Amino acid sequence: MAASGVISNSRKTLALVTSGLGTAYGGIGVVAQSIRSALEPYCRVVVWQHPPFWPRPLRIAKIAGHVLLGSQDPPDLVIYDHVHLAVLHAMVPKFRNVPYAVFIHGVEVWQALGGRRREALLGASVIVANSATTVAATRRANPWLPDVEVTWLGIRAASGQVDPGKLPPNTLIVGRMSSPERYKGHDAVMDAWPLIRAAIPQAQLTIIGTGSDEPRLRRRVQQEHLAGVRFLGRVSDEERDRAYCSSRLLFYPSEQEGFGLAGIEAASFGVPFMGLAGTVTAELFPAGNGVVLAKDLTPHSIAEAAIPVLTDSRLASMLGDAARKRIHHTFLEEHFAARFRAALGKVLQIDFPQE
Image (cartoon, rainbow, N blue to C red; front, side, top):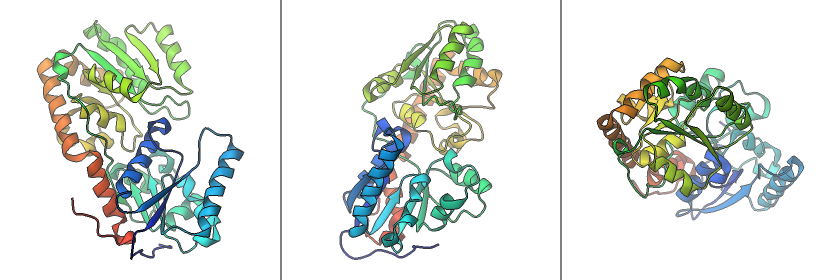
């Protein structure tokens, strides 16, 4: 690969090119925040932001300003938290010999890539992915994909723990509702909801998140008379955590998820979640380690997986405990930090602590 030179010597300067940091920018914003936290103790990290909510001309002007200023004194490494941003690297002549990393997440690379996006991946010193599932799906669409470092994500340790077996049959969906990307499982759960309510009349479904598809989903609830369903829209992190702690089961039957932070967040409190067989959930939670897997997205399969957890208190408690242990052993911020630093180790040549 091009731009494969290694970096050595004293404290390095790294530029993180991102749409933004934190939950306000979705899952990718959470990853960007984790990247900065992983590297700041050992490197100087500067953030070059491409604000997604600004009008396009202003977004381009801002990121171009960052890049042009940065090119006057180039960083030792540039980290692009999205392949769409990585195309900027080739546009700056002074970056020609600056190594760079690209983080790939999911559906944005699960399609044939050409032109600048393909060249951006081919030219990277290191490509990092959030799961082996993402790598496999990307390579199916792009057989030319170079080697990729798999770096599972991590979250902050939950502040509390719940016993889902002691909770009523409350269920939850957390995720963006996007018309072009209807893969979070909202429709599949709504299709199965009459079967679930028939078996458990007191079951409740809370939906957190918003997006362009929300009006359509709200109309479905009204037109199909789906009882026990409520939308909370966008909520704070604290409100989201309270919703996790009030739920016996999180629904996350996504076909096209590269990782799935909502499931990890719920599990960190001891809340089991339902994923889909053959997806990233099976990779992250092997042998049903704290999750239940629906066979497919049919109403029968979704209901068949959910109903036992909502009716069997002992099963819910057992799954929740296993899920929480899995998170605290594998998916905390410090676990991600160690994995990410190891992925960059050959390029940075920094003696990171062994963890």
